[in-house]
Image (tube, rainbow, N blue to C red; front, side, top):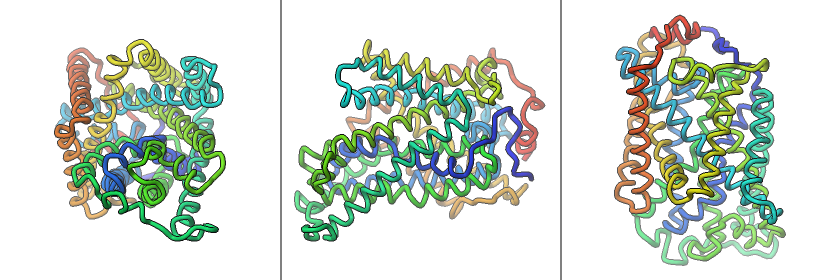
Length: 474
């Protein structure tokens, strides 16, 4: 089978360096720099274990995605895999694909809104007199234009956004390690904060599990690289390298940096609410607050940029199977689905307006539901890999250029872990509302699918790309 991407009208101008940084950018989100403080407050230094548990699950899911994307760099990635995994039961396959695609789109358009709101608050650090809604509008429009110009423009911006994040976290790891190990001028070796305030797990084991649930959303985004594969020059090679690079660095960036933070900053101090700023202050790094504000703003812009890209490409994929209006499939001269991008922008800005008009109802529902939806997507990815791998080994093992480790045992372990997270949410008071709203969102999508199945126009297989057609016959 050729490694050429399927013919879709999309451009194939993303290079290996773009793919690698897109993968990195998806992993290092604003949640690491800000939200990690909440996990540390709950679990103490044992928050390291919370991030290790969740990070391991994400690593396993990324390996599964890498295997499937290398075998078939399809537009829509796991949306397509969820559909064809059950092609022996077409109705179930259509339902799985519909849910996976629309849940993923929903997740990212909410992220676009959240990051636009967060970005406005960060910019106001320097420009306090500007209204937040105006800053959100400028940020959204700026990155919308970036995405509309070309996929290469998106890739270039994401490359530099991600590069800033990677350099920042690597510098933090190096400087903080020197400080903790006593290699810093005038500082003695000390890791006493890890056990000094009630021990390593001062609040017991349950908060570790609670922290793992909360940390799940921080990692979501690494999978964008498999969606971008359909617009890469050499998709199979690019995905294999990018997913492997993510796997080797996820635990270093998250677990390593969190470990250093709890060594530097007492877990029960007021400063842990801004963990990285506080850690820089402990090391007497000048201008710690503005430095971290700039880094976090970069992370927010990266997430906003990625959200517009991921949501538009997923919507484009949904149109190709009749799961979304065909008008969203129109491409510009540069091979960009402009209407799909604009819809994500409009939805995102509508959610921003809700954050001001209805913060306790509509916006609260959006915020509380999108994280659970992300877990549902990961479960569908794992189930799809379980079925597709078995079929590929029977019919065409040559496609398996990148293989999931210890199949099927680690796949089963990942599925069990993610279902355990969903189950745990029902017993954690702070997570019950997100679980409920996530289930409500799933219910709404099930109703939407019933309407689509009853009234929607079904595409003939001949309208699908030749490669996808070939794969569907497996």
